[in-house]
Amino acid sequence: MMRSNERGVPADFRARRQWMKMKRTLTTMVFSLAALVVLTGCGGKVRYPNYYTLNLPAPPDPPPAENVHAAVAVREFRAPAYLRQGAIVYKPSPEQIGFYAYHRWAINPCEFVTNSVIERLRASGRFARVKPYDGRPDTDYVLSGRLEKLDEIDYEGGVKVEVALSAQMTNLTTGLTVWTNAVSEVGDVNKRDVAAVVSEMNRTVERALTKLLSPMPADVAPGPTAAK
Image 1 (tube, rainbow, N blue to C red):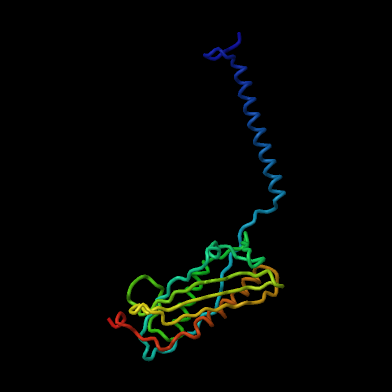
Image 2 (image 1 turned 135 degrees about the horizontal axis):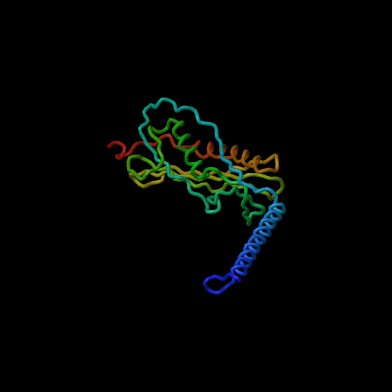
């Protein structure tokens, strides 16, 4: 006599139905795996981003302070939105901006430039104290700046890099601007790859920073805030 479950469905028919369901599931998995293998073969190996950073030589130790009392705080440099995306930028024309999908900055270029400015101001010996800006009124001056350009240039023949920086210093007591400067530097890239572009950016940023800070005024004097 044929066995049935409590709902009247024959047991062997129920088992056969479960086997067909398992077979369909297994077939689907096999086809999905095969499709994944084909797609992987067509696309090649999985690509991971390459990360880069600028690497400037450390400035020399500051000279002994003599009659230097002024303190300055440096705000983090700003930049256009396209330079804050993390990807290394190239410009195939003056009106077009491109981003390398697999070549990115390991550190925010604005943060790097800010730290470099702080190090160079400390090494200059022109200030008794140089620190990152934290909003406290315990300094005489605030330096604000902007990274205008950090681009690979792919037009006008050859490959170049362009770096542009601007900065100004404000007296916290008077609110007056006591110093301002803006520079732009261009460097030639001798090899068509991203590593060579970053190396030239490194050299060009160094030149731009040197020119930006070279005419820093030497006659800054501490205000009432520092005296307190």
